[in-house]
Length: 465
Ligand code: PMP
Image 1 (tube, rainbow, N blue to C red):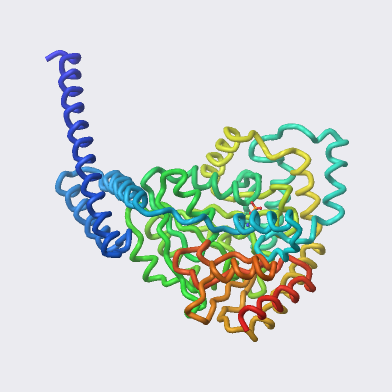
Image 2: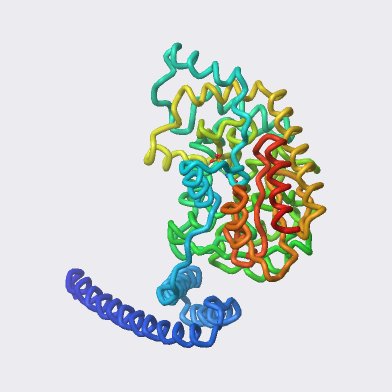
């Protein structure tokens, strides 16, 4: 048989198999719609990890029998499961989106109509950048630093960050392992795009910063939300993490200190997560944008160089530079190159003068220490006031936030936040923004001057009694 005849035969066969797959996928979707109807009428949850786990096992067994690649099959299975979930969600009336941003927009509307609002919803410090940083901007532009730069960022800034992190953690990271990004948020997004393929699973510890799951979903990955509980002091259950790892688990995202709980993960917990990550070849993305605001000993992921990782930090919080949009990612050389390529593709580079302001910021340790002390004082002050109210909370170890639970079971965070905003002009974020299970919680940000925080707590007490 000639090669072209053989090729033509194979193509016909592939066509037939493809059509069979499409037809079976259609049948599966129709069945998923039936499942949705039953679930909706009987109130069963949309996702059942136990059922999924069985299916995953059957798929793996079949791959072993067929001598085919289970990793690809399991990613495909995840695509099918995600399609079923999307179909099922189509039957549910979408609830109004809830996030710090949505509350902020509503609060701004109230302000436009003449109401005064105390903003305890935004995670944006009221202290601006140090004077020296502000001044460095015009200086940089006047000195001709107003152009494009290498996509990874200017060498001087990367070298300075490397020296700063090396000194802090006793490491020898090189400037080539660093990408300067548009805020920590873009570092996070690029890290995900660099490593996640459609159908891959990413473990997210809840309650969590909503950008994690939104970004994972946006690129076709599947966030696997693992809850932590107030009664466990927000410590993740390592057994649960282990049970949720499978061949499609590509990444675990950690955030310590945490937004919204203020929890700092202890070294023992990190040791165990790293051990699981290494054993299963999973990358850890460690979002440490609040690391300078830790009041208890903070262990950085950078101290676990045995583990594949992307470490994320930002100038936003540490130096009050949110609007500068300046952050960075540290990883191995290959991942850094991939992240840098993606930055070339999307925006060439961070503005040059902003990068120069970052160099200046790294000399402003004293200002950063002052900001840290200020936030800690505010957090402690607010916690004291909360102790008199019918709420339960873990005293935060760091970050800008307190995440209390309403003790009254008849109250939920959404209703309370709405009442607090409309009746008392105090904006907080309902807990549901950080995970479905936190409907009785709300998040307080202590980024406003102390007098405003005291006033806000008093108004809160007027509602809660
Ligand atoms: N991670 C967490 C946990 C955050 O709370 C934020 C900002 N709210 C970011 C990352 C991103 O911050 P930025 O992009 O300003 O660096």
